[in-house]
Length: 117
Image (cartoon, rainbow, N blue to C red; front, side, top):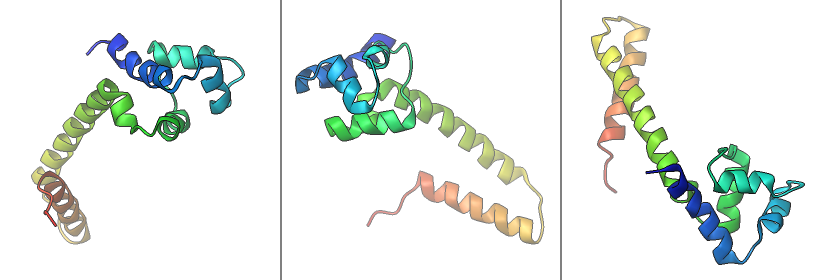
C-alpha cells in the first residue's frame, strides 16, 4: 500500500462530508489548513488526539481511515509479541517470577485463541 493510498481515505471522508481543509482544520483546533493537508498527503501522521478527532468527526475508526498504517503497526507489534512469548518460554524462572511469566504466557495464548461468547 502506497502513502498516497493512505492519504486518500482521509481526503475522501473530508470531501464526502463537504468540508474544506480550512473548515476541518478549524474543527480540529488548527489555525490553518496546513496540518490537514499534510495528513491527507501522508507527509505527517496525526497524533493520537487528532486521529481520534478524525474518528469522531467522520464516524470512521482510525484503523479504517489509516488502514496501511494500522497494518504496519499491527505487524510490528505482533512480531514483538512473538519475540516476547519465545523469550518467556525459554525462561527458567522459579517462585513469584515463574507465576508472573505464566500469567504473561496465558495472556499471549488467550490473545491468539480468543474464546467465543
